[in-house]
Amino acid sequence: MKALKWIGIVIGGLLTVLIIVALVLFAISKQHENQIYQIEIASIQINFDDEDALYNGRHVARVRGCVECHGNNLGGDIFLEDPVVGVLVATNLTKGTGGLGNEYSDEDLIRAIRHGVRKDGKSVIFMPSHEYNVIDEKDLGDLIAYIRSKDPVDSSHLPDTKIGFPFRLMYVLSGGDIHLFPARIIDHSLPVPAYVAVRTPVELGGYLAATCIGCHGPNYGGGVIPGVPPNWPVASNITMGGPLADYTESDFATVMRTGVTPDGRQLEGEFMPYPVFGYMTDEELAGLFEYLRTRPVRETGTR
Image (cartoon, rainbow, N blue to C red):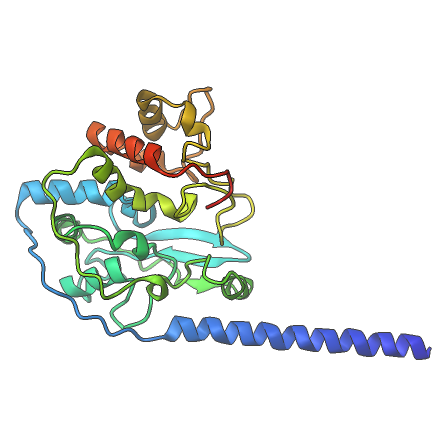
């Protein structure tokens, strides 16, 4: 009986320690969530009534993945709903009910897109603003113009984003691998990149490839994607250390536009968003392929 008593005391002590640790991790996540950022925004040219600018803005919204989360109408949607992660909702960007269009100024939108900071000064949640920080002034201005041009959408039916308790703990324990609050990992001192009228293929590919790092990693080596549900497949190695080494430029374009690999495998659009990346032009796809071919060879799993 005495042994059972001691076992009970030890178990109780361990549970108490675990609860304390969990509460500390939760408090850290809340501190990160509630941190306030003061970001000054330099003005950029926005051509609201220019058809070419709106056309380019739509293209940027597609190939940068904006429509994948916010929808083709930019009216917002539930991006992810999971017992562990919680409910992550992409915001309605239009002027409709529940949208940000009437509340956010152009500077507010820029602050959210490239700095990951909301109007209230807090970080956006799970939006890859760290990937959008590289967008140049023309593409950024055209994207804002396109957002402003969209018809109002009513999103009052959408729930609020709710971060699951286990996901908060995973976020802190990941040491920054899970980009739950992206404003924390962005260098806010960087100015908006200047417009480049003509890029070499490798430069163009590098400009676009920032959108790939969220899943494939900054080294493009692929592997398990931090913070996603366990049913998600691992991201492919898109350096020459992976299947891409055997691709032709035509193979790459086919995968990006149809999701069909050279061996006939159909990729799932839910995980590899070829339906939106396929909007890249021939020039953009060729540049992206050339850029990835120049990256250091990585072993699969070395994001």
